[in-house]
Length: 359
Ligand code: AOF
Ligand code: ZN
Image (cartoon, rainbow, N blue to C red):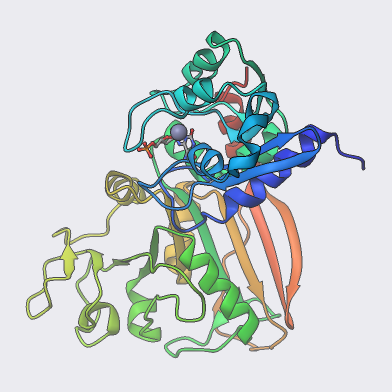
């Protein structure tokens, strides 16, 4: 397949944007490239939440000797430049002031504060705007951002590791299923999430740290579903010095960094999502166990499923959840001896995509 110049530079924007994964949410992943003729004169990306936007970093990267080329250059950016005064000033103003020749974007910003006004501001400055280049890839890259804006809930990733004969582990004991390389990948996925959730059985059986020790980047907020208040206080989630949000009754004898919702029954998924969304957790990573995964699947709240399938044979134990109806295979690849299988929910995507109109 041959790519047009527009597509080549837009793909570069996506690549740059991805560098912000794990550091910018609930802001979107955004990359920007400034091209003069066939030569890139600057690149930038949104590096951290609250920090300068991609366009700002891109213009800052122009060498003094290249400044004179800016009015003849094309700015590529995967998201419409913003028009609002947020934590940073409007990028559309900056673009208009710089007076580039043309702006090419993948997606309109669905944020109601922007939503077409950035494009309008730039066009009013007499600058040509072309929107919709690789729009589907752009939507996919920022699927958590579009889901968050349109559905007002976190993007939900269900993850599990299973043996080749379809078991999560032996009941009541921590079972090593994945290899080292797969473990590292799983920690990268954790670092790119905002919250990581497990149920009471997993907390008590595995005593997990739910951290990112095999990868770089931040640790997500740990969330424990313990409506029965039964998870032993000595487990890491309840006894270490890191924050844990517990959907369950208040417990005494725990450090202040542990927060309890006070509910002493099973919390419906919808309520969990509302709380997390209100805390700006727009990417939720659900690690199990089987009961919790099934609870999410049954409630219909899931967007993506990531399975790490190893070559070991357990011959029995806790069964992995069956794939829900409507799970479309996105990719399959090997990580060391383990196979990674990624599925997403086609219907949610169709819905989400059509809600976001590209002009
Ligand atoms: C851009 N370029 O690189 C990003 C944009 O609070 P603020 O000021 O950081 O604004 C956040 C909003 O800005 C975010 O919700 C989205 O609408 C837009 N993000 N826009 O022009 C960028 N990250
Ligand atoms: Zn901006």
